[in-house]
Length: 224
Image 1 (cartoon, rainbow, N blue to C red):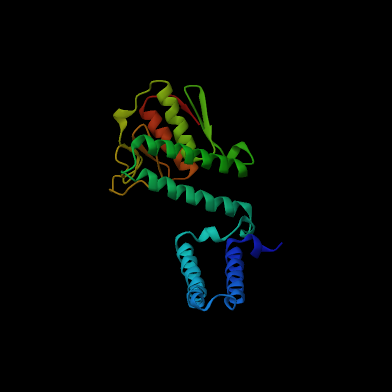
Image 2: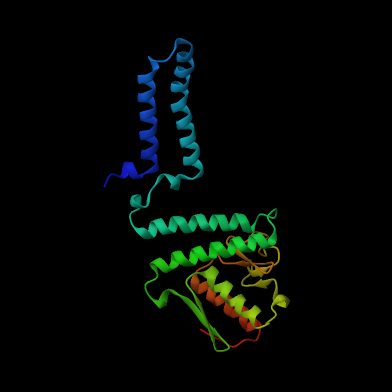
């Protein structure tokens, strides 16, 4: 398999090379008054390509690599997850974006994360699950799991506002109104639910442990 033809970098190289070759060939057929302009174009064009290349390389280096360049599919999926996390964090922390728009974007990102997780989930042991008052809640990702839990609380008219902000340690909150921990640092990977920020930057085991503490504070019967 020829990686260069499939790689965006290879396509750029081919395009730039062809442009230079054809530019050189047609130069002698141009009128004298146009030749000088065209010469400057032939000189400046590759410089512009190089500058744009390094700009994209600095901003979004992953765009230069097709899926075939990753050692395995999981590495490629992980790269996509990281981009989704960055996008989600930017949206969640952008106060210029209306609240309802931020929540809708977060839901779309969570759905994409869930679909990515389903690709490499091979058994139910990888899922996070618990039972609240006889109702099972499960998900493949921490974000989807937390969203499902709070959907359950909302659907059953269980008020939790009185617990906000909720501490899970000496420095961290599970949920807060301003998206900041006790230490003052912003949530790293929050989801926004009904105006509240919920921290999801934790392992599946840690996420389950924290939400059980929260549900116990609500006097709910929880089975893990």
